Amino acid sequence: MNRADVDEVHAEFYAAFEAGDFDRMSDVWADGPYADGVSCVHPGWTMLRGREEVLRSWALIMANTTYIQFVLTDVETDVYGDHAVVTCKENVLTADEDTEAGFLAGGSIVATNVFVRSEGEWRLLLHHGSPVLNVVDAEEE
Image (cartoon, rainbow, N blue to C red; front, side, top):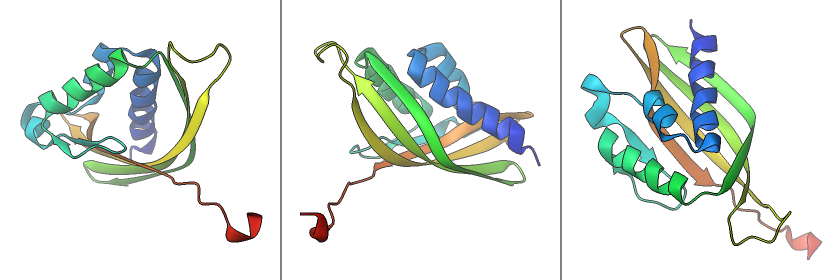
């Protein structure tokens, strides 16, 4: 099992996003024979399929993100031969250039990331993020 190797690439995915580094983000995603199967569902978006389309979406998102930070919780990694699945909760802090100084918005997303091992390297094949809705308990109202 290469759980530590998968966890390293998983962490690099979030680090690349936080840094707004498109080259690092591009390096995380699967290529070659897996390029057509690369898929991504950003919260509130439809399915994106194909490496080029997915990377275009990340370029757009990073170009329009002034600040973002992730605190990952409930991280679970399972390795199945040359495939791995990582599930987690993304606790997100974000701000943009129009945000009042010192103000950060926050939210939670549950994510599933599927990795494939190709030529000895783990690469991201699928990222799916869904927002966690904060439902107010009727008794709290």
